[in-house]
Length: 93
Image 1 (cartoon, one colour):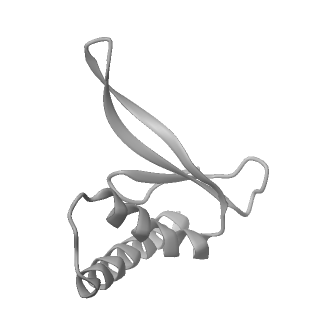
Image 2 (cartoon, one colour):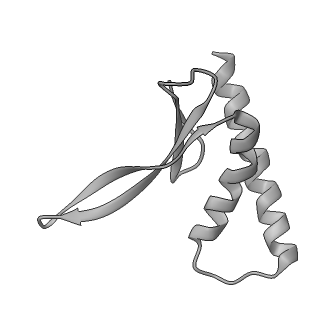
């Protein structure tokens, strides 16, 4: 099962540990003159709880801007809450 968490990240159920999840990053790159989508594995064997805590860090680290700690906490909370909503909606089905 694949669950899109954010625009740039999705998870899939781990093959070797069915109660764990693998995190993938979606990137665009140029290959032989044409744009292609690349799905790069980032981390393996996350529990959903651990995943929720880490995905915000990955998203924030990806932005090139420098933020103050208050802004970091605000964005961390927004991303984490959004991911929780996505997970709840996808796991209901």
